[in-house]
Image (tube, rainbow, N blue to C red):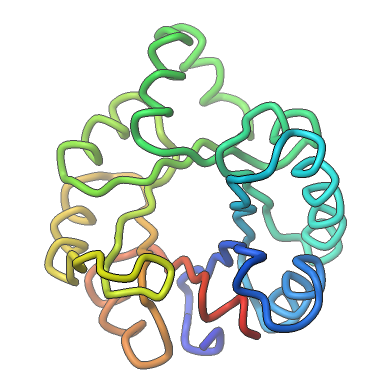
Length: 200
């Protein structure tokens, strides 16, 4: 699917429980070779030390291929390994942003460290942008094996989000070779893939 991206971005979201062969590092390297534009390390059940060890290994690969590494859910690991950024849920980001205050948020925006936020509603998208998010991940757009039974939000939802904010919106949820063109046509900056990527 990577060859379909054109000038868009494909981000690989990790989930070691979905890997068929090899380790997270093996899969990340295979995806990087195929043209992935970035990696979001999302292993939410791991503690600091375990996640840090994996993150250091993944960082070696992302640096080799000159693509960004974003750590999901653990800002301490993200900062300590000098990742390119941190990704969180909307509520977690809101809490962090409120603790930082306006001045610190402005200073943070001047740095190269990226903050990404997962959103599921238009109101969340608007507030996350206002609080200083650098990009949004919107989903789930289609039904996905990662969250069985969760109703999809559809391409129309994605289109509304993309037209309502000025920061990049990355679509997630059931995106594959058959539907990625519709996602990009809706105005998404790119797509995040988990199930598809972990099986490569």
